[in-house]
Length: 65
Image 1 (cartoon, rainbow, N blue to C red):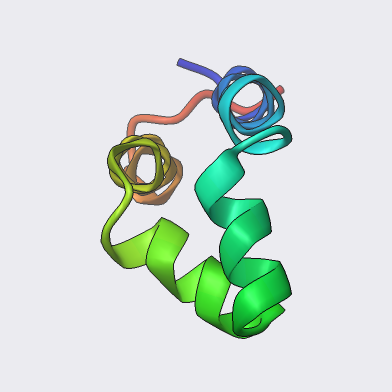
Image 2 (tube, rainbow, N blue to C red):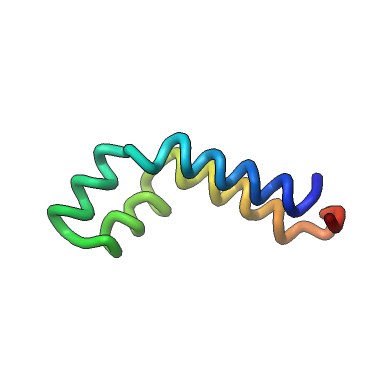
């Protein structure tokens, strides 16, 4: 899989799930942007999926382009 394809998948996931997320907006209003970001990374299932896709960017089998 190419690096650009992985980045596109991550971007699509974020724009589809995270832009209108009620928990994210609630935590940003109630606590802070940092708190919301930390929640998304460590506790949200979408965040886990994004991390999984991101690990693919570190692999040595990535095609350039």
